[in-house]
Length: 189
Figure 1 (cartoon, rainbow, N blue to C red):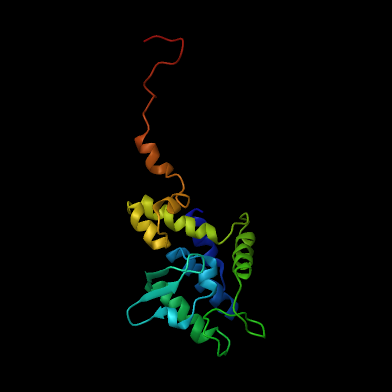
Figure 2 (tube, rainbow, N blue to C red):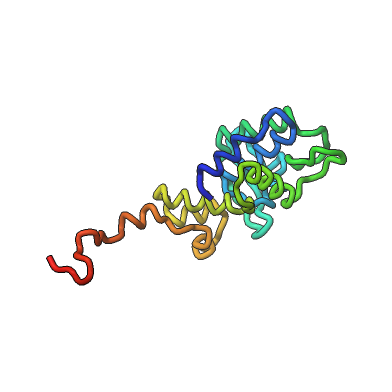
């Protein structure tokens, strides 16, 4: 997923509403950390270490623990939602439905909201998982070793990470041979 599409989606979210505050925080969290949709939806208050600026989760898919930095932009968005958009609830889960009864957000709700914003921009539908792939791809393009990308995405084997890394066509072009000086077929120089 191109960075400009991600930026466009984030820019049109109305952060003056409880739904917008929630959606912005969840989509930004996926964009910056590459967390799986299910792990974002199940994020609890105890998973957030505000003092040390870390997210510490047990991944739903693998059961493995993962620690990621809580960047200031993500932290600010999550704080804004908690303080100004989250409905009153005794649930320990951060992200809740806006309408009563306030329950834990399910992955399909996040996917639907994400695609609602994409649709309003005239973009085709795309699962939130595409943000995870974008994180991996952008890290590789930035020169970060695949082993580090695997750690960030919570993979225990690098082979699992390779499927998340799209072809880096920008750097591939730099490696390609330049055939522009070769004579065309049937001509001699």
